[in-house]
Length: 239
Image (cartoon, rainbow, N blue to C red; front, top):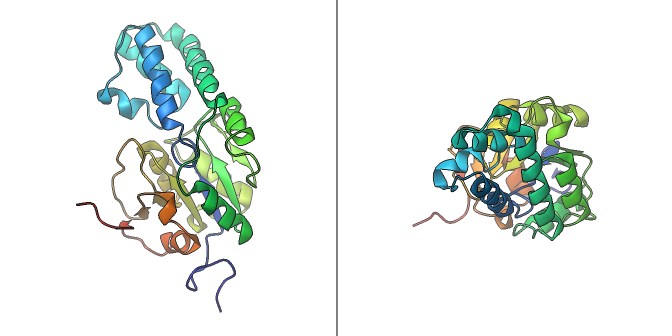
């Protein structure tokens, strides 16, 4: 018997846990622009070498990195973090486009009654702004921000908290991520991970499935993520 909402007889996950920035909404570029501007104000020209400490990282992590590379005082962290948040919030508030395939996938999950939630490393203020704007009307069961757990990504806490709220094991969930830190967080929590890279490459590993775009993802692909222990690259191979 085919599970309702599944493709080709593949049962869907107990829950799907979506990252926000760079996965559902094209905000990673906005975050990079924000960090670039704040870094310039501190006298540091941001480069690709800074990317691992900026892309997919929480505000406090990025602020700490900028202070370190500019030789600033630790006491400046709250001010730099506030500047990053305010600048990024302004860019998001002006509008951030959805990633290709995001709207269709979210609609398919809702139609199939597969529960899904948002698990972000962004502050609550940013998450709420995006959910009220670019993601308005999306039926998330709940949203988690960096403010909702003691530790955020790359620690496993956010994804463990999300699975607990759904009342299911993390191993029954598929996390959809784009960044190395987000992937590490979901992987450490025990989720199967569907990786759709944006700005930074993510290393293949057992329990990770890769897609070039959410346009390649459907309910069957999400169900398969739970049953494919070895890394898999979906879609046409790159030349």
